[in-house]
Image 1 (spheres, chains in turn green, brown):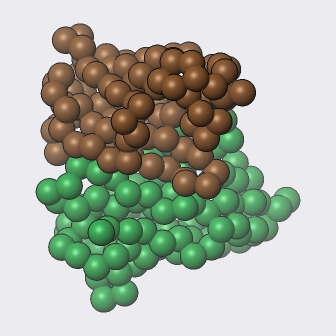
Image 2 (cartoon, each protein chain N blue to C red; image 1 turned 135 degrees about the vertical axis):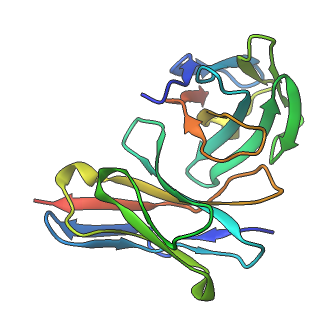
Amino acid sequence: AQSVTQPDIHITVSEGASLELRCNYSYGATPYLFWYVQSPGQGLQLLLKYFSGDTLVQGIKGFEAEFKRSQSSFNLRKPSVHWSDAAEYFCAVLYGSNYKLTFGKGTLLTVNP
Amino acid sequence: DSGVTQTPKHLITATGQRVTLRCSPRSGDLSVYWYQQSLDQGLQFLIQYYNGEERAKGNILERFSAQQFPDLHSELNLSSLELGDSALYFCASSQRSQPGEQYFGPGTRLTVT
């Protein structure tokens, strides 16, 4: 069964510092990969997606992610974090013939001033 | 604002009761998905409808049912409620029967007492 692992439950960074959130997915056919962000009390917002092609994808709010097939990873990065980035981040995977989005457990990001 | 609306925002009810959660997808989206978010289970896919027909099923209990109406809005019915059903219920929509980008509503927080 497809699965997604986000190894870090909680990460704290200082404002202006760089950020990398890790995501690993279970092996299978080429997956569709997503990162979503959830602010407190809000729904999920799509940050970026990978379907095929260039393995470095750009998203909204200055985020990017890199698909590495050899490592089954899709890590999310941002060069300089802003206080407004504090939220919970979810990696999700979807395989071509499967309609279900499978989410990781999420990584809670705290940003210190 | 994703364009997906959900009502009500909050719902408090007693064990054994039945509730209905409502979702209106983005304009033009034919697919509707329901997810449950709880602290212990994380984000779990429940069920998907496409243009009125059930398309995929996830971890949906037999006490739960859903439908999508001709105007494409969807309802999730939860019956014989238990304390463990307390969670955030999200609706999402997408344009095609094959899920790509899913746009999430703000959620309905259900509390069962």
